[in-house]
Image (spheres, rainbow, N blue to C red):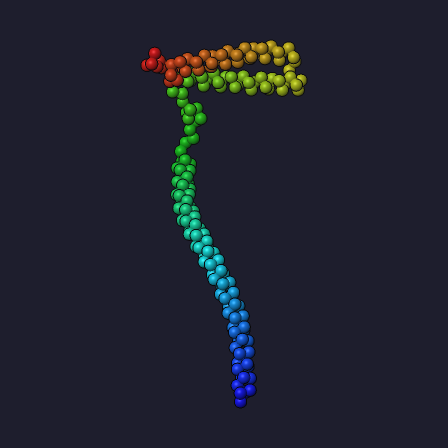
Length: 177
């Protein structure tokens, strides 16, 4: 019996050692699985925070776009109303839209228009000469006459600008003098 007890003790010890080894392996595996699950849960929580932040940002953007849409609809309606009211109005001449505030401003407007008109005439005179429509002597005489008129218009424009700058820009003497 003693042999049996020894044998039973040895078997019990072997079984205990084997069981402890397997439990240790199971425990290590379970610990690894739990660690992986915890890391995964942490990543998911961070991802959830990112998704929630993105959802909040998108909601904020949606609200902004809806407000902008309302503003655009109102502006479109205003423009439609304005255009409908303009259809009934008589067309206003362009000259009435731009009225100079003083005599010198009127002079400058007239002189600038004259300067540009002369530039246009000179351009078309050059084109006519190139095409052979007018002879060279007529071209030269006309260009000299127009260039003199354009020079005088530009000089007059510069003089008026200097005078207006000296007077304060409104055509009246400034009080600082």
